[in-house]
Image (cartoon, rainbow, N blue to C red):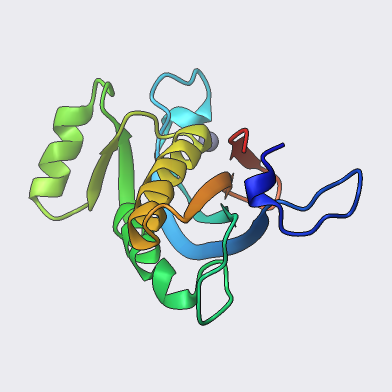
Length: 162
Ligand SMILES: [Zn+2]
């Protein structure tokens, strides 16, 4: 354990980090998993939601928060741009030219992703939120997990070691 990050010394279980989770929801979008053998190859949509956990060793001076609301505005904006009323298509989708045509005719708001699954969305959100919060807080805060949820039943969680 790194004693320089000790927040409270309670014997066997030293307290070293603060964590807070924030929910980003109201993100209706559609996608398809073109390689799927079943109905997931059809366009279908969900209201996606992402529960992002942030972590730090040192609180923000002044507020005493891990991160305050204004620090999350850029993340919210990035998630809205990617997932609010958009159509997510994989970069290797064989029908990508067709989706580009639909986008050119303003029928869909196209976002091309490496992976359109919830796993791919979780990774995209993890990397995007981590980059933005790190810039916003000059490296004081980072992301430790993202839960990507597409429905009441299905969620994917991506976590880091620290
Ligand atoms: Zn599906």
